[in-house]
Each structure stands twice: as structure tokens, then as C-alpha cells.
Image (cartoon, rainbow, N blue to C red; front, side, top):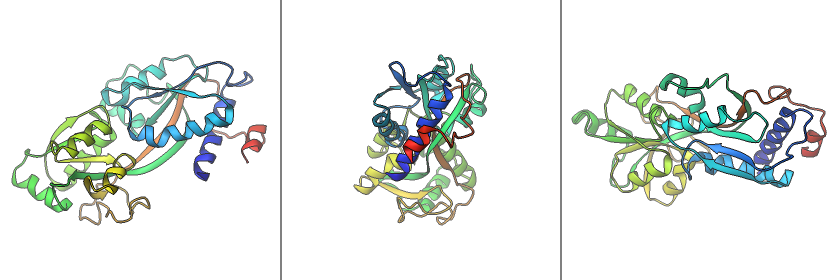
Length: 275
């Protein structure tokens, strides 16, 4: 909660400063675009920060999901939005990945202003309870019958897709990619045994892991996650070069006035109010 409060204050300060002398918020609604489906890690980790901030400013945020095309549909909407501080983007690592995986109608670097980082966590390799017991079991099965296994992702070029590709390169295996619009859809397929494996954002998978509805084989961080200390890392499982850390951050259209987007206003009343 302390970290959440700090991030909410930092986010509030940055947005307030970014619109210059104009009072913020002075109108409704404040829209937050999420480029993945409801129930994704953007929901579970990003929304609470905005909810906390809403209590501080006395105005709620309107969340709009625009899933599809690996997150690029939602990104495009914000890139073209009026730069007045009333259309924001809550996004993940795909913000920096998509220029290499899609032909975009916008510039992922130049058309956005970073507001604040909100969370960082690993992906976790999950399988159905009736599936593999270890990462080595999965790899052995894939090598025995190349191309027979299937894995899901949140879309072509999404972090969950590229994590799997990185793992397969490291392990020397191939599997069939089945893309979806977000983590909830993929997890349903894993639960039903219709997919063999998935590198899920840890926050999305933890409730199902803790309730023993699916099996976690390894996390993609360099060290074990404090949120799941019993789950080994990919390195511990014997597969180096499979690390991937997933992050979530808030963005605004690049033309939004932002004198302190990169330099905090340390002496402002807003900072003292949050202290």
C-alpha cells in the first residue's frame, strides 16, 4: 500500500505538471486506455494505482479496453488523442516491443510521453495440472515430437509471445503459437487443457496457481519472485537465456505539455501534500 500510495502521488504530480498552468482535472471524463482485455495484468496491477489517485483528486477515471493486434490498437488511439491530459495510456512492455514486430501508423517512441512506471514482475511458465511436472519434461516432449505442442500468448509480438520464443530458442525446441487478446483468454485454454504451456504475467496467474488450478514450472526473473518464492527460476530449471521482466507504465500523448515529466517538481504543493 505504501508503494501504491507513492506511485499514485508521483503519477498525480506528473500529470498535473504536464498540463502546465491549466487546472487539472477541470473536466470529465479522464479516460485511461488499456490495450489488452479485461482481467489482464494491466487491470490487476495498474487499475489500483489510478483508483487510489482518484480518491486524492476527487474524480474517477474511466477505463476503456481496446485489445487487439498485440496492444497496438489501444496505443494508436492514444497516439492520435488530444494532448490535454484527459486521455492516458496504461501499457506494458509492448510499448517498446511493437516497433520491431509491427508496421505502425504511429511512432511508439516519439508519439508518447512517459508518465510513471507502476509495476515490474516476471512472467511464469504455466501448464495444465495434467501436463508436465518440470520444464525439462516439457522440453523433452517437444523434442520427441517437434511442432506437436501448443502455447498461447496475448497476441503476436506481445511480451508473452516473445518470452516463449526466447525460451524455445534457448531450449532448441519448436511449438505452435496460438495468439489471443489477453491473459484471461489464454489462461482459460490452459485450464481446459487445450494449450500445453503459457508464459503468463505472474500477477494474472497467481490466483490460479495458489488455488491449485494450474501448475507453475518456473519464473523468468533472474531471482525467485518474493510473490512466489517456491517457484524456481528458468535458470534454476536448467534453461539460461530465458529471462524476461515484464513492466507496466502510464503514458500520455507526446504533445501534452510536460515541463516535469522527466524532472519531478520537488518543491511543489502537490509533493508536500503527498509527503
